[in-house]
Length: 538
Image (cartoon, rainbow, N blue to C red):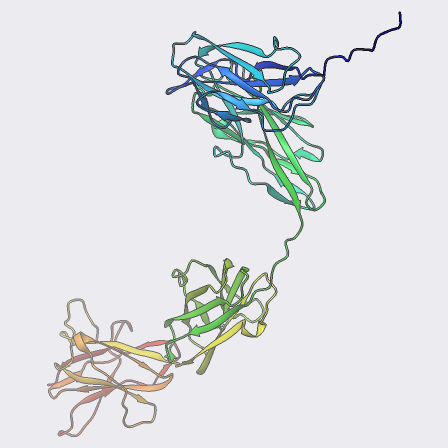
């Protein structure tokens, strides 16, 4: 008989399989919940693509989905949908990682988690669509390995192109409910990275052994909610701009821990060349010196106003207030500013200066630096100019405004001072207990006559027995004008520190008595003492 027509075979169909893999060793008992994590692996063993895939979980009553699963999940029905596209024939889907909160129960309780995968297409078989696993409730250590400190935040760190020291920090943290014993941290050193010193760690918690390609640190125990950090001293060789490298670490414990996989992290670095600095316009916009005239020993404030007149920040800003060899920064005279200010002296000229630094002056930012300076004797008489200059690490858009001056006038002067006292025993010495002679008792005033002058406007009044007067440098005679019935004691007797330094001058009977000193020399910043002992006239 002739052969009949061939019959067509069945159309190819998908065939999804499901495998539930525990990501945690137990269901972790916590204060407010019991947590477990699983991974659902879906494969297509069929001959046709599966356009979609869903997994329906079967959990103990009172369970909930925790966090954000890697598939799109309905938190009420526990149905999760693959969002990564079709599952090809012979291929696999993106794994679903999901955390569950289970109902409270005592340690040792065993819970069952079941799941079934499905697709809208007819499958070649369905007896391989379901899987389940069991998990036991327990208190357990849960280790995390964090890059950097306990915050777990490590910003990628730049290193220079020529290489140099790098100091990665690793922090072990136990977020579980049981103690982790015998911690072991293994840090793998990438090519070009070597050990450069001893590690620094929390109160000696870690004991580290270094090798050519690894650093192994051990510690323990680590209680629940505790952390222990270690910082390694390493060095890297040169690299190319933007080249990156990572220093990985792995943390394990001899205790049972919650997660199946060891705790891992890495600290990352990047080779960075010099960063171009945008130009700025850093300027001294004013120098404030309010005193029109100053004398020796006087401290005055010079205010320097610094501004950035450009859009980009001025980095590493430095201000210098240049003075003169006889004008010095006042000790502690820069306490009114948050700039770092130091006094200095120019090695060549001997001139003093204030130098102040600041990390960054931002766009249109205004800074006022109150700097105290003290004028010393010998400063040239007349105009004194203080010059403030500013510079930064940026190119400057307008160097013409980097400098500004303030002007005052220096007034040279010295001081004549002394004591007027009543020489009760007429021995020419100011003895302990002898009273002071104030203005209006024995004396009218004290005059300071320039050498050769008959009159002067320079006077002092010895209130409470003491007088002092600032005078221009020069040669003077000190004249004491006495009241009728008084004269001065014998001068220049005994100790010069306690004797009388003026001599009575004969006058006509109708003239008031007075006494003069010898000619004295007053220098700029100097002090001359002329004491006066008075006694009743016979």
